[in-house]
Length: 87
Image 1 (tube, rainbow, N blue to C red):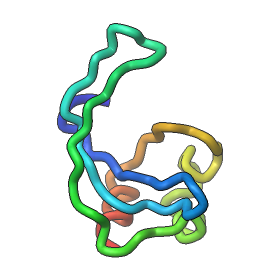
Image 2: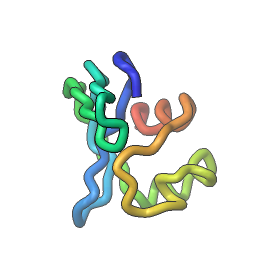
Image 3: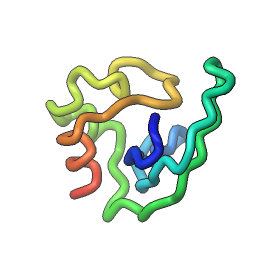
């Protein structure tokens, strides 16, 4: 992650939904195994998007979000980000 990068906040509890946006403010990578990332909250998404909805969309067919569980951070393509923020 780099300062200025756009993020989607994803709730991993019982809901498993994308719920909002954020932006990376700073990254301290002095410990490469556990970098510290400061983020600034953005806005709530117009509607929460469930993991089932994400899995049903072909844009996410190869995304680690749907292929690998228990990841803290996954990259999104610009079309994936736009899908999540435009619902």
